[in-house]
Length: 355
Image (cartoon, rainbow, N blue to C red):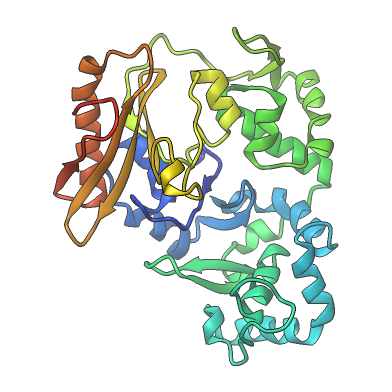
């Protein structure tokens, strides 16, 4: 986690909860419940809105307060800010109830107020109030083993010594997050580095110059890239990379699609919201990394009731030897099946890679 800086959360469990997958890709098969223990029982990590909802080390909390301040000022999440302005007494009562009874699910509030009137979606006003309190840093999230959200006071999640640290001004916080992003990436364009924590480009991009002047970043040129690149001063180029693994769609290696295209010539998108008949590869597709190339992709589904990892489609990239790739891919699919707790693979014939 300290090398990655953050792990993105996502609610789609087609293969496995996505926040378990980056550790699997780097460490191999491990006990996935360890992630929940570290995050939601030991409180070494906490949930924050940065690169979408993500887990980050609790020590990062001071550098994210600017985001909470912007939310509280109504600059972001404007609908939630409007609710807070219109319903201050309700918001206060929800906060007090969490203090008295937390951790709580929204449905466990004494007055959850089911959706009605102008408020959007299927969420109750209680859910919206709790989400607002989370976005401004008044409460934090704990997850059950079924990935259900419960809310507790942030001071019961983030340790006192972290919360007692002075709040950096926004430029200092952004500079620190840019530094961490660059270290996690190794090399990237300004767009890549800013995107890692989803920082506001207008405020963050000019600060990259400061990191160059300080010697933390070195401006460089990457073959095939039209934009200037920046390398963290501690980044090294390994003599060789010998690794094969399947990646989550939300792994930092591929979550920035333009970066994945520039680095690997790998065009990738999630087709969850594409109608089935129009999908090119499938509903939930995992790329296969072999050494320093993305060489294939697999449409996968864990069928827990049948105890199988279902391979719905298998695809090899152009200029990759399919016969050479097939046994490597099969080994990695079997390793993933072990990780997700499936005892077997079920392989369909869809795609251009025969396993």
